[in-house]
Length: 360
Image (cartoon, rainbow, N blue to C red):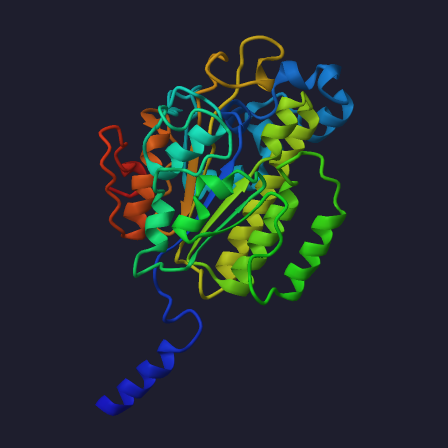
């Protein structure tokens, strides 16, 4: 009987998914996406302004008098699934706040804070191509025994290459207009490489989100990373351009992307019931004045305001939080705790893990 048990166990260990009964993580960022639209849907003033897009098209797609219906129309998966099965932080209308702690209020400092757990305004004070001197929690994961060489990063913005400090961290970063980062790309990855060459390069160092998404989804299918980062960027790019219809359309697409990633994860034994999803942003946007939504930074009031949502393995179904104050510097240590790795940079201003996400 004992020998039979050992034989069965050995067989099971080599079955896809069985030996992988360990924590997986998908971390998603939506660049410069405001909490106002996440929790309230399309803004009444902006959607009715023809300077920001075709009013009829915007209203036909995303408008409703009810706040609940508006946000459901804009982000249907978020409000039909995540709001019921996960945790949503940052609805200031309900009394819950979230902010970055850095004083810059733009992308590189925001991502550094998200990924490292502390603001570094001394070294990270521009969006330039600085190799990040700080070690991200995903770099620590990639060097750990549990997740060694099983961390992949995808981003629409090319600056993620420096943010993750690719050479030092060992994390392969498919960002900007890069092609597949594997020695033997799949047929789908080869197609995406070709498509990347065909698609117009509207922004100098940033590709469209659909390419980033397709590369990331194919990586899940073909390479099975245990930790996956995806940084979407169309929201910020269209907001800076003053294209509110495109901004709304971009986040509507990201909502669909998240749904597709989750559905795939739940269909693959490698990820099924073993994967935690965290979705957040790097900064907010202005909200005082008709054009404030286009901007962010230290000179734009309220653009420090952020949000976070989480669902999947280990995340309690708390829904939309109605109290509490949270900060982006809490994300990295929360991730470390979820992954079960030690991450202790010598920083006094590191945030504490978010107990509300950890069922503590």
